[in-house]
Length: 274
Image 1 (tube, rainbow, N blue to C red):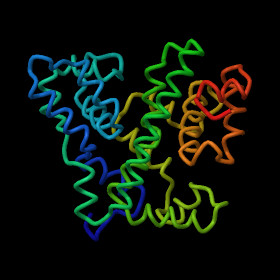
Image 2: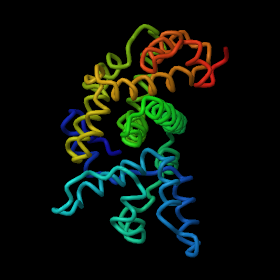
Image 3: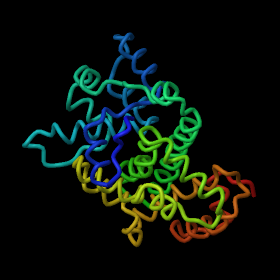
């Protein structure tokens, strides 16, 4: 980014709204192969590719919401449905898999930030799997929306790793020096706002589906669906540090309450070492 980088929350919302959202290199490769294989190109395979990249997912949702037909009464979440509504060829043309995250950060010499971004994206995939599984166990018919909410819960963090890597590394350094410092406090200190605030502002600005906004708003954690998303995100974040992370026992207890199970049973279903 240029030296006149946005500083205020409102400025970042404006910047990220105008910016072309980058995608992961693997996504671009897979979609390129799909376009070349005309015989097997279909919306289902397209969806399978997009579902692995939170950046491509939010890029597609942002485009869909800004091009909704006036007669469309319901929000569409599922990638396959979006591709069918817009037309697969139109979708691939209007929502291109570029620029590439890896090129942006490598060319600017921010390889450390790239590592953190990729880890966060991988964590999003894991969180979405947990959230989907638990929603099914709870017989929640909104399981796909819950999966997407967990998948995109940390999209603001991923975007800032791409567009503000130095500041994000400063946040990491603060927390490394002071293990007791909460993420929100570190973010407020460096950025002047929290990533959760940025996320909600972007969701509203981009007119993302209302249910998705509600599910990614941690202030709604008293609701079962939101609790599902938060606990899935927490488990993915803590387990990324190893199954001996000190925060995991509390996670197991809270998940057990959500699913009406015992903590030991939760450890088994999430694949933790018992």
